[in-house]
Length: 290
Image (cartoon, rainbow, N blue to C red; front, side, top):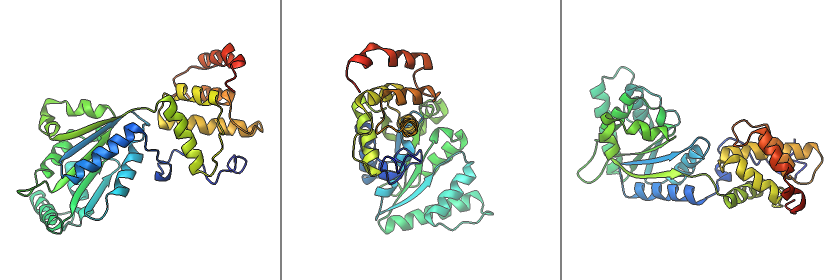
């Protein structure tokens, strides 16, 4: 579509989490550093919370790409599992003996033996849970019991939980207070600042092969306001704005294309009338933001 027109080697604003496009902004950098440091020191539970679209899955993939050598990782993208399914998944991911007919205590023994074997060989096992707010209460309790497995020196299984703010609500239940007390480190992913949005847009364009400034300063300003700094919304609006500019034969995106993209995206912060009002505002006509 517009990729060749704008001299891009690939789509710069795809919604698929691609680590090539990861921008190490402050909030995400702090969360990543917290996870890496905590895992290096064999801490038990780590929690990362962020609103929808703030890049939690991307952060998962970056973390997993950095956990090499001494780490054995198990990634659960959808933890809506029964306790039995959770234990079966962990057993298979770490290479423990498992068959569907195993009794619960036999399966736990198998997992424990494999964890001890891995620890003996200097391996740390990390379970990464994305969308952790969807985990049933009984499964969370089963997860807590799994983390009881330990040597005299350290935990045999570490857990990273990433989820929406509902995760905090879930963990505030009185019957889950034992697990909540085990969360040693927690971080909250924040939306990008206005400058962060501009850096994010340019980073993705650079990564896709075009280092020129395809978005005017006014376009970036409105994109930041409309998206609220949420990476997923930035991608959606920027993609639509590029399509609009391409369709009009423009060499770059200005505020009009971003306004049209925001109007077409129901999740953004502005209604159509408010965007239209901003675009007619004399500041944009006479202020030279184009």
